[in-house]
Image 1: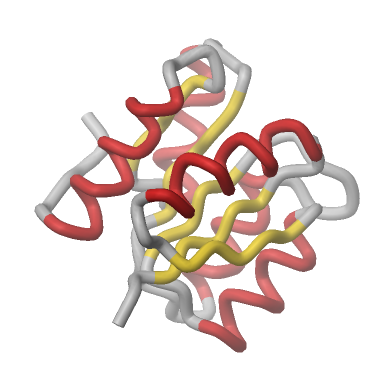
Image 2: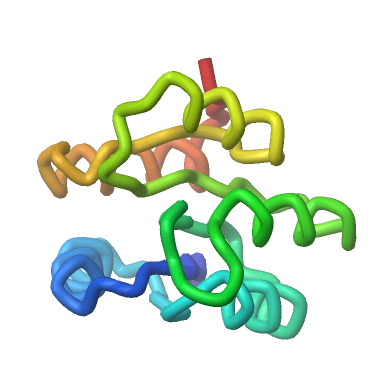
Length: 125
């Protein structure tokens, strides 16, 4: 059975790009446009991994991650953001994120991180 990844992002271009990359790798991809949708989908579908943008409408990625962890969601949550801020990295880790990927990375690097969490073990440094 294919592993399921939830991509939470309000940018349609990022969604399309990640769909292309992870779809070719055989992952089943779900999408959410904001943190509120991400929480609902995670609690209903229990994806194997979440790629979480930080700056989204309604509920941001920090709060969505915190709420998911409080409700017992244990799958890896990986930040996928344009923010290079050390403060955002710290806040993401404190909220319960497992890793932090910059959107400026090559898409094959995104695939590599997803593979590391779903095939091997990985932790945020």
